[in-house]
Structure formats: structure tokens, C-alpha cells
Image (cartoon, rainbow, N blue to C red):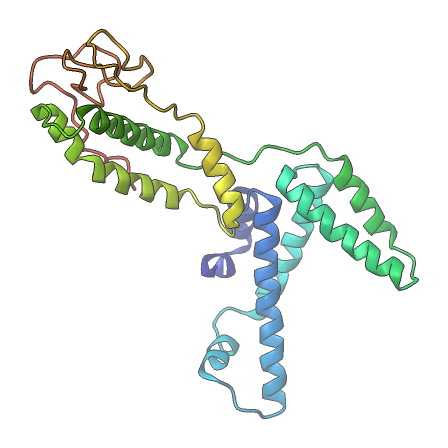
Length: 268
């Protein structure tokens, strides 16, 4: 939030176009700035009336972030939102929510007996005719899929052992499961968009994880059943998995299984 408020004009333009990728994000950012301006005006009224300010109010009122700068950003983002709508860049989620909001305003105006503004009617028409666009993919989608796939493989390996002691490679691989879980959580959180609502983020996350196929369980016969997809482990003669990170290649001699110790190599 502070990065948004402290950004230069050029930085703010880039934030609007690259960080606030959906209508929902843009609208949430706009609401945040409008609330900030409204709160400042409320405090300013108290100052004019010589009323005592709370520490929080004093901090906001005397902030080094100029309120006129926020008002200018408000106008820029409002124009970008209108342009976003006119170009039909809404997702299905944003289209549904925006249409409900606009039609609610229209109903209130008609109930009061007033004539609806032409701009409102035109915007409703634009939103209805919009061909919904897919939500943007997660920033770290590939890493999220990679670690999710490895965790699923390790779960399958653990299930295939049925409580028995596995090979050194298997034991070593299972011990590294927490690394993959931690990396998955880190990449997931770093993929959240600015001012993104939780329900939209979950939609994007679910879309990302749909492509992660669950590994097939070993039949225990030693003649296959481990799944031939990318990253799937090969079953050994005892029905276990000799490696979880070496793809679909045949298992090598002991100690040759690929290591997953660099789970955080790509974090930055």
C-alpha cells in the first residue's frame, strides 16, 4: 500500500498496468485511495474545529505523503478503470460483480423517479456485451506446479511403502518433503497480486493446480503402474519408488537418485 502511495507518476502508471492486472485489483486499489482521502478530510475537519486528534489520526494527517498526490493518483486510476471496461478486459468474476453494482445503482435511481444518466446506461451495455477474459496466470505458476507435483509423488511413495522401511534413496526423498512444502507456500504467497481478493486468488491457484496430475499408485507387482507422466517415479521390484525427482527414466544404482535439496534455489 505504501509503495502505491509513494510511487512517482511514472511508477504509478507502471503499477496500474503491470501490478493491478484485473478490474478487481484496480477497483480495490482505487477504493483504498479514496478511503485514505476521505479519512484525511475527516481529520482536517477536526483540526479546523480545534478538536484533539488521536495518535493514529495525527500520524496520518501529518504524513509525508501529500494528500494532493493521492488525489491525482485517484483520477489516473479512475480513468484507467473506465478504459479497462470500454476495452472489454473484464474477467467473468469481475463482469458479474460490476454488473450487479451498476444495475443496483440503476434500480436506486429509477426508484427515486429520476432519469438514469446516459453514461451509466452505456457502461451497463458495455459490461453486458463484454466477452470475459481469463484470469492472468500466477507469477510463479511453474514453481508451484513443480513442488505440488513432487509433494504428490512423495505422498504416493509413502503410501506404497505401507509403513515399511524403504531404501536409503526413498528415506532421503521423504525426509525432504518439508522443503517442498515450505517452497510451495513461499511461491504461492509471492504469487498473490496487489489488492487481489482472496476468492479471485484461489480461483487462479486452483486453475494452476489443475494441471498437476495426481501420480498413479503402484500395483505392487513390479511390472509397472507407477505412471509415465513427467516427474513420476518408477516402481521397483518390491512395489516401492526408487526416486521421486528423476522423471520416467529407469532407476540407477543405489545413491544415484536425483537430489531435491535445492528446493529453494529459485527463490528470490
